[in-house]
Length: 127
Image 1 (cartoon, one colour):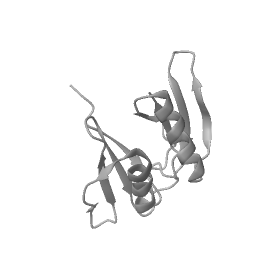
Image 2: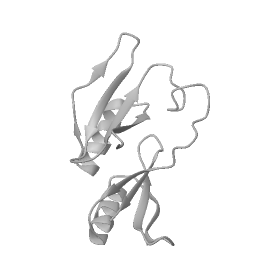
Image 3: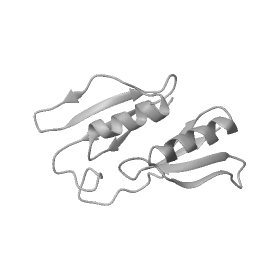
């Protein structure tokens, strides 16, 4: 068994696609759209799970329903080295995405930083 993909609501589909493709090397498939205004992209990152970004008119606060989301904490990308964590964190900061933590070594031994994507979702960058 494996995780196939994770899905996030966004308020601006094209902006989110640019963020995940430009900064994390994602490759977006074709856009899917439905008659009710739902639109999405699946973004691949080499091997492993894909990310589905989705938007739909009337979706409030990026949650997809009338209730606050629960359970989602962050999406983590492994970049291969501490230097790569530092470099990507600096690149994101230069692009206007201020790190909310790190780069740092955490108590559980990870070397990581964390930024917010354009919709305020936490994205962790780790070795």
